[in-house]
Image 1: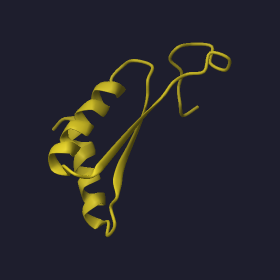
Image 2: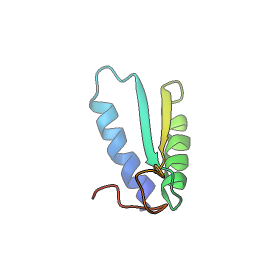
Image 3: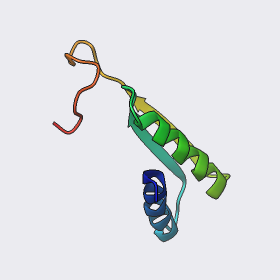
Image 4: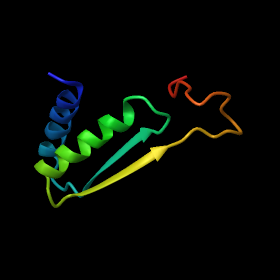
Length: 76
């Protein structure tokens, strides 16, 4: 099973237990790597499964005044 399948299974369980689901909000870091691909796959599959629900996607970028490198750990 791929990572995207595991993530979507978790999202489905949470969405099914929700009584007033309004939208999906997806955040990711835009520093390259696998985050953008995972986000695209999740949004694509959420569109198939939950067609008319709103899907909002936000990308978080590193601030050159604060970050010394393009890619830094977010959980530091």
